[in-house]
Length: 222
Length: 289
Image (cartoon, rainbow over all chains, first blue to last red; front, side):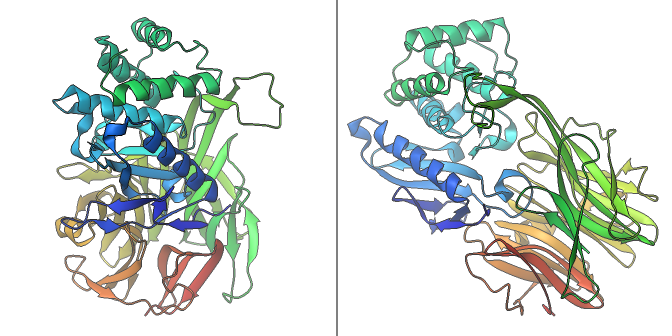
């Protein structure tokens, strides 16, 4: 399986755009493994079908890069940096720092695409993870099974931020999975009517993420 | 001598005297874990290779799934440590991990030698060991005892989603390349131990990944890849990396096609040599000029 076995400029039929070459939107040519492209395709399909009708269709996906021929998962053709998702009538812009946007509906929209990405990629590094990711979401499929892993800082900060944005949990987003985070996570799962076994059951975790995203995209709390 | 990995993930070296026939040798993991090897340099009468070793503690979350199916494996903890290998005969490698780096996760990507000084560069990684977050420079005179180099500047070597990617000695100066989310940059040092950013290089290489750096006479050469369309370009500097001129590649195998990837650039016997892959098959070619 080669890192560059696939080269493409759309994901699931949705054009890719490179936004960082101001001021022009540039067509982006992604390269990755076939398996990784299939995961991106499924993610793109989720982005299109999870939204309410008033968002309109998915217009383009802004990216800062997929295959980069140096270390780690970008070098393996198994990583993707997401800058922006553009629907016909709505936008979610990690590149615009929407995880700390003043408007809560923007922060919830960011939570939604973060959650949808986690349905397909184990490592999703977001604006709460560290400063390097304040302007994009990093997606890669290293890290093992698609279940919640409290040992991963990347999983824990997401649950803490989601609990804050969706149910006013008032947690410190520090990546430490302590009793308060555990309790807030339990409340989220209960209210979304999802089994608690998200650390051992990928189906349960994916269902949790799907239901969380659907509510977040509609700016409805949990 | 070239190092890399087979498609089964084994760290290997390829050695050739004529550039046509190559013999392959394995670099054994210096400890339990998965080795990555990225760079190699001649040091006196031996070769030194650098990379990293990833140790992970796998946990099965679904005991009802068949043992050979690893789709339920996740990891309770992990650690990526810098690693160094050396060989005298070019065939039998010994290695060790470097544990005193001061970061939980770190890796080495490139190494170069001038007189008796070895300089290895790479990166520290974030808390999950998922992404590079800072530059790492280690120096040694014997290949076994390594000390930290010093990185100075406004960001003190912060490289979001990046790493140092290459290093070379050029007479009385050292140069290194880095790449991160914003693009590439070039760093300089007079002694290999104290490093600072060449400020103008950030603008010059914005939106590019720098794959490697080499010196031919007074000319410093870097190989770059555009983040937007993956086009490979070569750039040369005659004034100590302050200004750069684009140089079109004159390598047939490495012409820009979708399946071609340039991984590194070096100089052998006065000729520029590019290594990479085409359709995921290793390619090495000289004559960039």
